[in-house]
Length: 126
Image 1 (cartoon, rainbow, N blue to C red):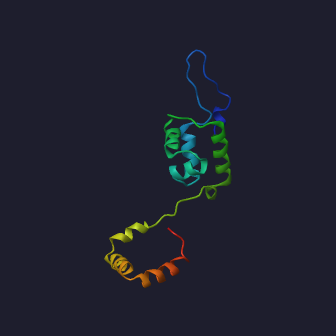
Image 2 (cartoon, helix red, strand yellow):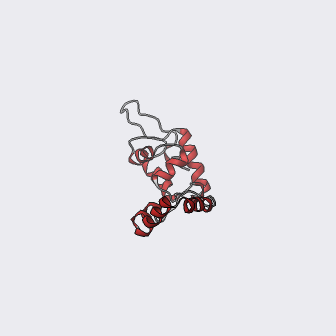
Image 3 (cartoon, rainbow, N blue to C red):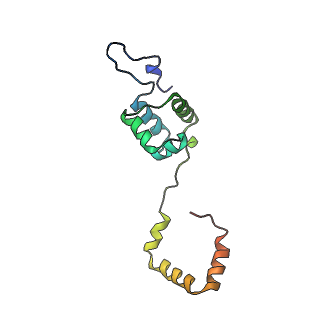
């Protein structure tokens, strides 16, 4: 369990230092076990990617709610974290001169544009 070795520790009355329930290394290990990026984990937990980075650097510490959510994700495995599709960025096609030829034709011919719009309805927007 995440934070098991640190469970029950409280701030020292004399020194004022505090060990969080979940260490930065444990957050990093959990994210690695989930095979996800900082952004993907952040989205799954409903926090900003900067928050996850802060947890991993030890600058911030997750609340009990987030620790419990992280534990559930780890228990469920990597499939529990929605992953962003990897691959070519569709906008890379803008570098292709043939794409611009098609765009010019679409702009010049309203009938062609209407036909393409009808066909395009069957496809998801990337």
